[in-house]
Image (cartoon, rainbow, N blue to C red; front, top):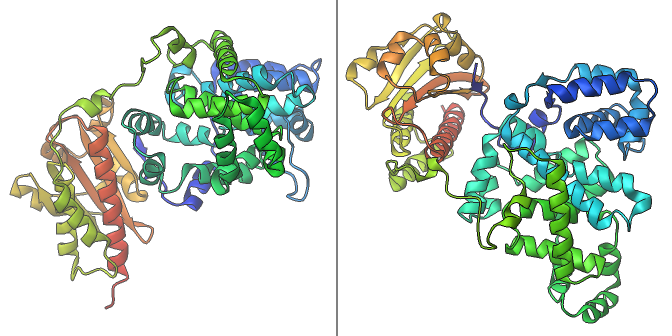
Length: 507
């Protein structure tokens, strides 16, 4: 049943939800791994090579090995060491617990971020492999797993990937602002905490610490890297700053450089963001920018040959296009005309809902403000129902855009599996043409009669951990777009805060 719990908004809540999330494996990969683990003729290196072809299971093995050992012991910094610590039997049991799904059922966003991770590993191999031959195992493994903290996030909430693409890459919004609105926390901070919790290799944790806490070294290096046409002057500037030179030449930086190249290339090869990473690579390798670009493009083509999947985007495809061409365009959902929300009145309603202490004298006025806020955020038909203490009855409290007869509606949750699930814990059901035929039958007929469409949002709201309210809303039967869904989510969050403040008001 497609009932989703509301996304966390705090760092601790995110860590709790994503920390132990088990990611699926494609069925053929699952079968191949099972055969590999049961083949007694293979050594640890051979097994590790096969597991690295399935990055999600590589993460699971490394995570299990590091979390099952004492925090005082050194974490396993390679897959070989992790395998040796766990043993084959435990790895086989771990694989048996991992869901095997057809490729089409694995979220596209998860498959796309895995492709970016593999592309980063290929860039690391091509650019730094010969220079760091003795550290090849660490370089390859860390480059592949650097973006691992994003994998469970996009496996659980795949819609975030397209939203991020549209808002950051297409519309040019500030990433920090988008992350705060979507996640409630900075993305880099979340990645760092997950990497530390899983005890990922030092090179990965070190790179996230740099991005999250101290970007000064990176900014200084970027300033020198801009002068790529004068290598002698660059070297003089590095010689004059010994700590910066020592930091720049640390082999662990290759992991960050390779992933920076792969992530920035996902948008385009000639953006300022991509150019900055290319210049940094040139500074690290002490080669001209033109040579860096030639090598990076060649390694991208090699990566595309190994990772071809027509359902996914590989940056090597755009090397055949005009240099100014862009793959990303505004999504159809974003292009669809929609009724603009009454922004100013919506903000005023949300401001009142968020006020602390609560200035609502009773529940009726609070729900009236909540109803108005939902209308102003773009919802045309709204129904607010209050649950009794035993969750045995849902009674209408407020309506908008519906016949007044709806005020007399009373629902018995015991007759609807969906209502029971929504009352058990805060969650959301989005009805769409793709699932309406399957799930509409599970909704009470009296509720469906008020919303005769295939586009409906049902959201349960909790106070002090207990569901107290159910919201049903739609846009007059029209399909929801990203903007309206985001506005609905933010409005519901304001209502949740209002209920919490109301419960704490002075008596």
